[in-house]
Image 1 (cartoon, helix red, strand yellow):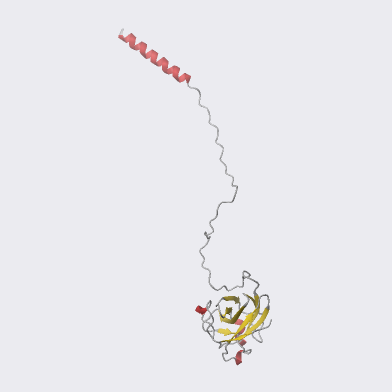
Image 2 (cartoon, rainbow, N blue to C red):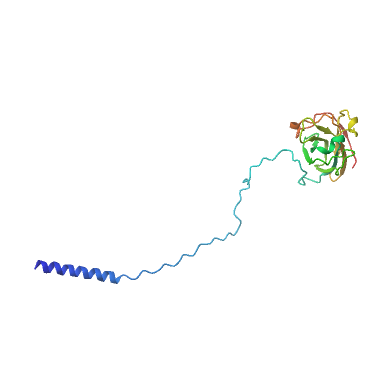
Length: 207
């Protein structure tokens, strides 16, 4: 009797399990989700204090710039170093005597106006105006020992180290100068950006 009862229970449970399995629906595939897109109605915010590089900008730029506050003056600068003038590059500077503001331009070798040598035209330098400037040059390969100033001297072999000429310049005007004085006393390299303290003679030059 107990065996029949146990067999009956096993059959009933097995039937229920089979029925339950048969009643589960087949699994269905879920749809592929659609990627979400975002449309900007305005450009992303950019931090104005963010810089792409950390390059240090020198105080004195060796190339003229057109970003002055107003119309600059243009100074055409010739450098005459005598018979050895064509073999060296130089940096030409204009330094405002009262504020010390200094701008510069690079003159490559072979561009100097030395006599009897093939030369290129002198260089134009854009100078903030109005202002009063002294002009000088330092050779790029030896700026401490080889330097030239704009003085009243016009012939390199005759120069004795006269005071620099401080020339007034006006916006939009053009000027021409010749730097030849090898013995002139110039502002030191670390004095660019400072008021000029070396001897100079103030002149009012007409373009």
